[in-house]
Length: 424
Image (cartoon, rainbow, N blue to C red; front, side, top):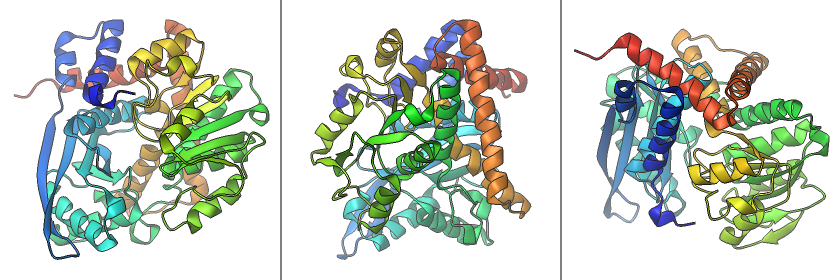
């Protein structure tokens, strides 16, 4: 895959242009949606543990606020770029719209490698980053959440820093927090659980029995591990997983509860060393092997741009369930569609996380917290409805599921743009 030539923002705009042409979108509305409302670039100087000062670069981008305050995660990764964050913010706009949440899209990131930083360095960086972007975030304006290499602890530091700056406790400024300080039951597993719900509905539609299905999962972080657990509980046989340490494969099915426990006990929460399968140590080769496995369900749950025109012909899965954001290029999309692969697009399939983030935000604003069974029941309702809405459009318009999801999402946002008009 030619990473150097890949620009996620260009990909996101190409996807928007494709659906705009399909639905004859008003050119003035398209012009507005092709631009992000606001992009903040900040310098983050922190004193490292050795006493030296290092300056990191951070971003917070808000794509569109027509349907409500901005919502989107914060990622810490050495490959973060402004164009990547802009693309992720646009995809968040569509994701919130496709499942009917009253949010616009945002995203944030810091260019760093947290694997080579101490916990205290990450805390100092997080707090300074939060102070710098506090100009545009807030419970009524923009609500961050965890993403790649961030977690509940990072959200705790963000919430505390914002609260110190405004002078009162403001739990609603972020979601994905620990339950003890205003977090929600079910949030950690929400994206993976939402993926399982969408896959389950797709299996019903395709008349496939989960107990006869094999699954390969790329990425074993919050999304991939929860997806593996939920699909395992559904009855599927998970035969391969990968992470940054390589891959583990077992044609008879991996012992997912044992693998989850192994990862919990691992110092760096990696699958390396798990005894229940065959290992491929090289991460690049492990991902090639996994993506090209002859399985019923392939779930890319890592980073964007994993399935491209270079490898799409070698994808053999019957269902592609996108747990990551933007894992499939538009060129690959066409190839997979010609091969008859049923694609469950990212803006639908991984919307479970932002859905339960919405529940957490509502709970914080009301200071009234829900039981886990109520949260999972409401997540089930929203994700099932989202799948059925998208499938209905796909069948009516005779188009792939991704195009159907974009038709639904872009139409909803475009309606909001027209209703609100242009200020002044």
